[in-house]
Length: 272
Image 1 (cartoon, rainbow, N blue to C red):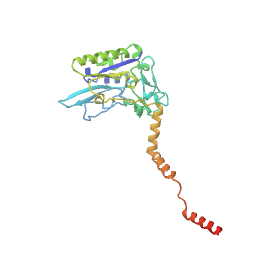
Image 2: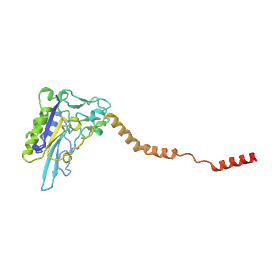
Image 3: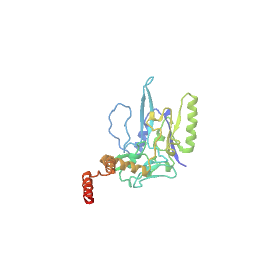
């Protein structure tokens, strides 16, 4: 049965303990950052930052902060896995975790382009791509040793819950009903998106407000390469030249009227 993390944004207060726990457990380097007008730090994922808390400021009717843990969703329909030409991205059957084998990764960055959540991150230093592995890989495997993912174990408010996906979905729906009785409209995001996310949310605002696409799309290998070649052709001008060529070469060649007149006159002389 797939394992999942349920993220309840109504309980998150932005402490960023999950960020620290992820870096600590996976020995990820700290990155130099600077203030960019937001309390988010860092402001984006990287090959050394696999999870971060997003700070969304709302100013209508007063200042309000929304918080959301951003990390890999371990999608059932995983575009990153579908477009990898080296088969370096695979799924753990028991847990559903989508993992990048960095020893097999060729650094083509197809997964970076295909992911609808912009999760995989390329490392120029290593020449490979990295992302969250749900603490389910190699000597960093917490789940396989009966432990919770590092981020979940660090959460002080219960905003992150780990367990069997089916059970967590039931818990999420019960929580939504509880919030409704308190006057808060909430819903589950990730139950059906991309055939089900293994890291899913309880949201109390539209998904776009939290930086999540309302209808994330799956990119299979055929669609990906068709789009990629189209971009290449457009970029080089070849694709725009094809219609031009077809249009101006589809018309019949103009007839040589003078030649026709000469042949006509010649025929008349012979008859006379």
